[in-house]
Amino acid sequence: MNIKIDLERHKTVPLSQVQLASLLTDVEGTLKKFPKLKKLNVLGAQDFRLDMHTIGSSIAKIAHDVSFGARCTLDLPKSELSWKPIPKVGNAQLEGQLRLAGEGKSTRITLRVRGELNDVPVPLMYRLVAPAFIQGKFTALIDSFLDKLTAASGSHKAQVSA
Image 1 (cartoon, rainbow, N blue to C red):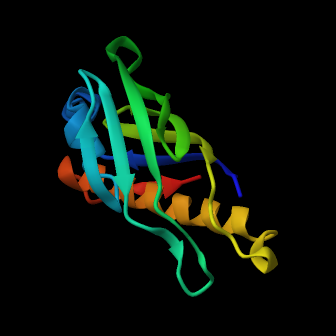
Image 2: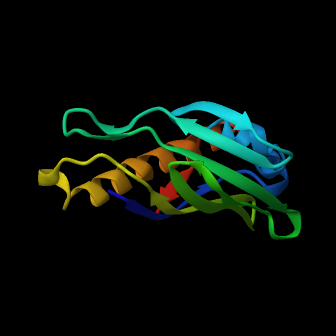
């Protein structure tokens, strides 16, 4: 079963955009903070393959080892790190953006991820609930990722919103 992912999450932190600039410029370091990352393979200058630990629930028998390729692009004037899927790399095609927006003495971090997980093994009786279940798992991963990014930048006081 193929499952679509479409998420956007925000977090406001009491740090300036300048203090958070390394989130955009240190692409490999930022990607390594993603929760459940098993292995990050560097494929080229800004090309990566991310292999994840199992996402889902073994009890519900909805579990998948997600792997995907990401071609990253940095746009410093827009304060944005984006990625597009690399065709035929992994079992998912995911794209997204990590954006920073100054809000006075604070910065709003926005993470958008969308795409599709391919060939997710789902028992027939769970086919209707599997997309919402997997989307929920990804939401938790993205919230955790935002927490890790801000903790690494020295901010523990932040507010997450959808």
